[in-house]
Length: 464
Ligand code: A3P
Ligand code: MG
Image (cartoon, rainbow, N blue to C red; front, side, top):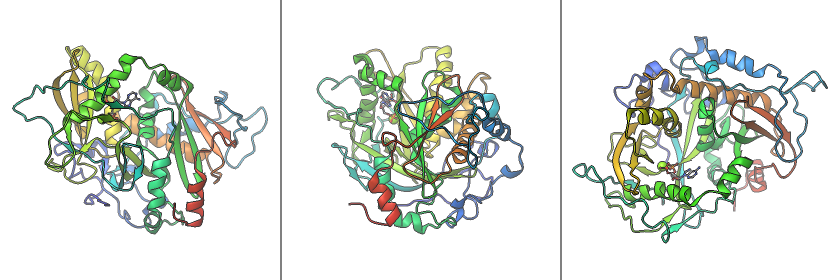
């Protein structure tokens, strides 16, 4: 199951991803450094590619981040304890909890070290949303033949009568990922950790949460709330739905629901159930079903273990190893002018890039929708080449800013959340135009690590 990419020397460009991209210049995808398989996850690993000596604006960003600020931390629902500076007692009236600024200019430096993600495992969720520790839901990329570039897709087909929607009001948190961690805990522990942690990673989370962090410096619409607990040396990060997101979800118009359906339907047209099969677009679209990859990587000094849903694999593609073999499928309104394309690059491609870059998914295949629900064109974006598309546009987002901000955010979490207690939750809140702030909570309403997980990891018991 575990499939690690071939180690490459520090600073070398990746071999299993994009050829011909000067990734070394970006300092992304640097190969696993010396102690990749040993006790490397304890935080002492050196950066490859000269990262250690560089003077990064991150340092300034981080410094600024930790300056006491007069801005009070935002309150969420429930009662919050007074935030405490690690190792200090808050002095009434003189100390304010630190915040983290998000302005892109603070993070505009060289690309940080990001180790090429390695797949640690896989799991599936079936039509009833039941967890299975295997790849039964993995689908296979099966695009229409190249001689028919104008695919006869009807993305609206089945919306009224062949659509089983996942119950989005059921907040799953980290549940399925924790099931995977618990089921693999012997291996995770055995992989070695100088700190003796039962789960040898600094952070455990969903890829989607990290995607939101990456795009934060450029996001102007939607804020986020991330709950964080430190348990046995590992920080767990789980999203909490904001009031605005809940309202949007509950009041989603039929048109928006149909648009969401069209994204899933596109997957049905582009994927087969078996490696040599053909797509069967007549079936039911059931959004309970999911295949997830669990990857391990490192951003700067932070080791990360996260899971992300994957649309399909292309075993015949240029990169047959997971996670590079995975293909992300996306839909987008048809683009008619250079101005529309520029706007697409600025506002949509950033999310597509962040989502796929994080887990090492090498390709994004987009279907451009016409008003009648057909797909007017297919276009492939190689994840590692996306930066080439945007670098001529001065007002556009920068991959390095996204990654440097993420690195600073993870450092911020480590600095703030120092009490190892699964019952203590720090809630990090961000709204466009503000810095990231936090509150502390001990009430049951906020606790997100389930009792079964805490017990399993604490006592070494197997989950039921
Ligand atoms: P598109 O992204 O093509 O619109 P993903 O691309 O992440 O695999 O998600 C598959 C589809 O789920 C999306 O296809 C979209 O239709 C729907 N979807 C994902 N996130 C959504 C959200 N936050 N709100 C509404 N629909 C969403
Ligand atoms: Mg997709």
